[in-house]
Length: 528
Image (cartoon, rainbow, N blue to C red; front, side, top):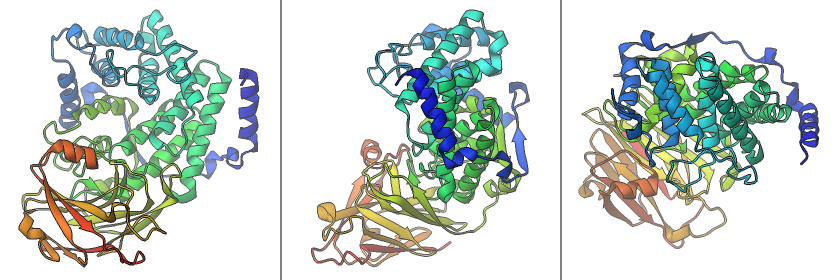
C-alpha cells in the first residue's frame, strides 16, 4: 500500500472504531507505589541481582573481544550495554558504546526482504531468525537513546535512530495480533515511539491502533491472552512500563492503566508461601520459580525487597540469562498499586477464581476458561478449552511444599488431549476433544515431582507424597515411567529446572468410556 494511502487508512480506522474514543479520565485512579532506581542507591539485595548478571556477562578487566563472540546472544548483549551505562564505572560507558556499535552491525537492513527487515541476528554465526528480536532489541535501544542521548557520540545517535526506525517499520509490516501479548505490547510502543520521535505518522498511528486493540481485548474479560505466564507476564510489565515512562498520551495513560491491571492479575495468581504462581499457564518454562529465573519473578523480587521472599533461585539456577532483564527494569522503574504490595509478602488463603481468556490463535475454544484455588500450603489451577499441542502450555497444576520447604507438584501437560477444571477441593480431567468417542492416542498423562515419588506410592487410589495425599477415582489402567533425563522433561513439558527424577503416569482410556464423565478426579489433601 502506498505510504500516503496507508496513513489515511489507519486514521480512518482510528476515527471509526468505537474504542478510539478512549477517555483517559475514565480510568480508575489508584494509589501507586512508584520507585526509580540509580546504581549507587540500590539496596544490597538489588545490587546483588544486578552485579550477578553483569559479572556473569563480563568480569572486571575482561576484554570485549572475549565477550563479543560469534555465538554470543545479541539480545542479552544489548542488555549488558544498558547495564554498563546504568552502572557507569570505569570503562563501562565506552564498553557499552562499543557493544552497541557491534549490535547495530548485525541488524537485517535489506528493505526488499520484508520478513527479516529490521530484526537482528540471534548471534553472529546463527542462521536462526527470531522476528521478536525487533521488539526486544529496539526497545532496549530506545531506553539507551532516551536515557543517555546527550552522552552518546552524534554518529551513534544517528545510527541508533536509524536502527529503531527500521525495527518499527518491520514491526508494522509484521503486525502481530494483540493476542500475542508480550510482543504486541512492545510492538505498539516501538511503532508509536518511532513515529512520534522521528515524525513518521504511519508508524505513530499503527502503534496507537495496536495499543487500543490491546486495551479493548483486555477490557472484554479483564485478562491477557498470554495468560498467567511466569516469564512473559514479566515481559508485558516491561512493555507497559515503556508506555508509562517514554510514551505520550494516549499511550502513556493506557500503559499506566494496563500495567496496574497486570499487576493485579499477577497478585491474584501468586502464592508468597510457595513463591510460585498458581496454574494454569499459557506459556511457562518450569514448575518452580525458585529453581529457574522467570522474568515475573524479577519484578516480584523488587516488590518483596527480600531474597528470602523472592521467587528466584538463591543461586544462579536455570535460565539465568533472563536476569539480563534486571537492567531494563531498573531503567523503567517500579510502579504498582500500594494495595497489592502485601499480597507478595503475606501468605493468605485466596478465594476460588474463574477467568475467561480470549485466545483464538490457539486450537480449541476461542474463550479458554481458567479456574484456580490458592491455599497457604498448596494450590491448584486448570484450563478448559485448549487443544493446541504445546509444551509451554500447562493445562493443570497442583503445587505444595514438603518438609524441606521444597516445592513439589503435579502437572497436566498442554498436549491438546484434555480439558481440566478445578473446584475448591478437586481437579477433574475430561476428554479435550468433544464429539470424539475416543481420546487421541487412547491415553493421557500427568507428571509428578516429589521426593516421595517412588513407584510403590502410585499403586493405589491414594498417592502418598509426603505432606500431600492425592486421592483418585482411578477406573482405568495406568503405567508408571521414571524420567531422569532433563532433556526429555524439557521437550515434553518445557521444564527448564533440573530434577533427579519425575514420574510420568499414563492412563489408558477404556473403549466404551462415557466422554461426558471425567477421565480422572484428583482430590488433594495436605496433611501437615
